Image (cartoon, rainbow, N blue to C red; front, top):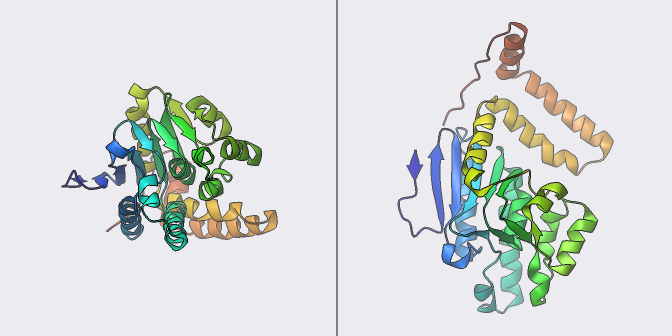
Length: 266
């Protein structure tokens, strides 16, 4: 198990049994996505992508909030359109890196997830939140429509619900978020750690090969026509069937024994 050595780092990392835990570490700023945070997250995601031993990622926030969005003071200190375009492009690239990462990414939410913080939740494959958590895309309240968060949000919940949140800035609670599909599970605050660990353990118990095949096809097929999606999924599934883990898993099922998965190497 390794942990970031410097508590002053804006993103902390802990590696534990095939899972990587990334913690946004600006609690005094509600973990806003400053340039430094975006750069650190991107570097971690790039490193994880190249490491076959990583099988799951958890993203959380330090302190009383998950992430309150972009650093508005930093944005106001750089009042140039070119700066804003580059900032939002960098953020969009980081969000897409989460989606395209070859392993599942879980958002562990305790507290507020607003604007780009809500975008971060929507970009993750799974999201488990405490019952006291709140979600909003509230840029409209300061004269800024959350256009880039809208991309992830509208791919996570229905268009009308997404637009309602975007145009009103209204905050929704965790129960509403799970009912709408923004998060996958809601638990009491004192159960959050256990719920996340249980989900991680379940993912780690599955074939690493099968999970990576699944992540590689799930998001791309959602953007395809029905016919193209079936064609793409069929090819991925056939390739998955040729893997050693699929053969071992099916043989184990037929022989009524526990499968032994191939262990990914570094």
